[in-house]
Image 1 (cartoon, helix red, strand yellow):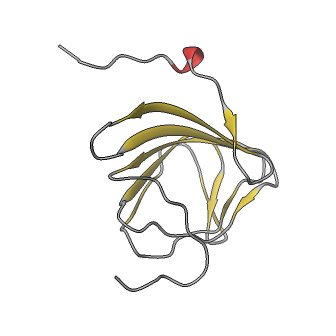
Image 2 (cartoon, helix red, strand yellow; image 1 turned 45 degrees about the vertical axis):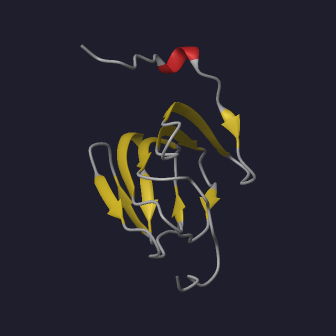
Length: 116
């Protein structure tokens, strides 16, 4: 039996500090900070290249076109990014929705990776 059950229609989208990008937090683990989110990227919006201190990130494209480092990927594409590695920029030509899991606390960092 599943311990957590969430319908995305019951979760509000939260605008981020990036124009055209909104996120729905589907689940956040209280002890590790790990979380699963649905992110909407409007057509033409850009998430800059970024990295996370401790979180590995996985991304699965649910709908639309997801542009990763200038290459467009369609529904069903899957990506993994390890903590302390730069990935992105991400964008979309016609808009997309992706399902993302962070293995630890979400701390979006831009600029050079800081050595641990």
